[in-house]
Amino acid sequence: MIIGVPKEIKDNEYRVSVTPGGVHQLVEEGHQVLIERGAGGGSGFADSEYAEAGAEVIADAAEVWRRAEMVMKVKEPLPQEYQYLREGLILYTYLHLAADEELTRQLVARKVTGIAYETVELPDGSLPLLTPMSEVAGKMSIQIAAHYLEKMNGGRGKLLGGIPGVLPSDVVIIGGGTVGTNAAIVALGMGASVLIIDINADRLRYLTEVLHGNLKTLISTPHNIAEAVRRADVVIGAVLVKGAKAPRLVTRAMVSTMKPGSVIVDVAVDQGGCVETTRPTSHSKPTFVVDGVVHYCVPNIPGAVPRTSTYGLSNATLPYARKLASKGFLRAIQEDRALAKGVNTYKGYITYPAVAEAFGMEYRPLEELI
Ligand SMILES: NC(=O)c1ccc[n+]([C@@H]2O[C@H](COP(=O)([O-])OP(=O)(O)OC[C@H]3O[C@@H](n4cnc5c(N)ncnc54)[C@H](O)[C@@H]3O)[C@@H](O)[C@H]2O)c1
Image 1 (cartoon, rainbow, N blue to C red):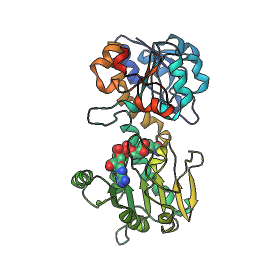
Image 2 (cartoon, rainbow, N blue to C red; image 1 turned 45 degrees about the vertical axis):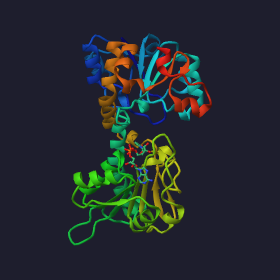
Image 3 (cartoon, rainbow, N blue to C red; image 1 turned 90 degrees about the horizontal axis):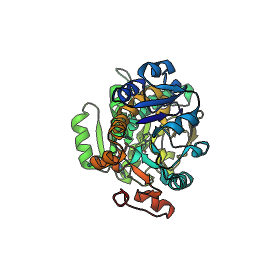
Image 4 (cartoon, rainbow, N blue to C red; image 1 turned 90 degrees about the vertical axis):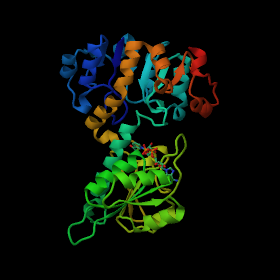
């Protein structure tokens, strides 16, 4: 198969969909990889590394799109890329279609086979192509919080882990899934006092078993959240209700009880945030202050560490890309139910119910179209 890797053009997006190692594997398996010049630059991969791995480096994005049978990206195509969408093209990338009606209509009208990373789903309900980015964001959330706790960054001037004879900071993590667990690992490692709040008692049981040390757990109720937030130096928002907006668990009134200079990192901001005072910010202006509390609400935290994020993403996406390339689209989705769940558009129809619902458009089960 001919696989195209264009350079990402979204603002502040430095990731690339395939590493030189990934190219090497695809080429070894008999595929041809076309990569746009400079595509790996933001993640620290030179064109020469891709060329050595066997890719053809191409100066022109249009040529990459035109010659490729499957285009592998990181972010959804932007309007200036719509011109490249054509019948039968396999587009394998994050799509987030339920939030983008125009792109959905373009993919349908142009009969693109759109496979969305975020809806590839394993039988246990987990989302393997989202997990690595949640791991990155969870780990980052604590180093971000530690930074903003510093006095000159607007914080209380408190060291996260304390020192012998001086108490550590209190970190409250709401949601003990992938983000929350990774945040807890880092916070515990730095010596903080960590409390995880989750609605799922079994999850808390599991976390208690695997993350001993300073970890405390609490079941999620409005009262428990209010008490914990009032005492916290750091609050990490990490809840997810699949397919829905994040519940607003920390109210404005709760924020106003927090100590001045304490820090909220609302990682769930990409789903609307679980703190009432949250609004999306950006890497260029990541924080704002409400009632003396520093809020950090960047929806694409992994973008700050593109080298790690690119490796993490590629580790997860490459096995499916290899299946698609080697078996072809039809056999690959017939043999892999998780990958089939990723198909959002096919032959001019929406094949993912939530996307069709979002825009009142027609839904056709994939099975009927193949
Ligand atoms: N900002 C970013 O850059 C970034 C990056 C990655 C993920 N995210 C977001 O972070 C959030 C968490 O992702 P995840 O992968 O950890 O999800 P996850 O599904 O692994 O975990 C979510 C957890 O929230 C818990 N939960 C649900 N309702 C709750 C409630 N009422 N009270 C307490 N806990 C509750 C669930 O039981 C689960 O343990 C998502 O919104 C995700 O989109 C943001």
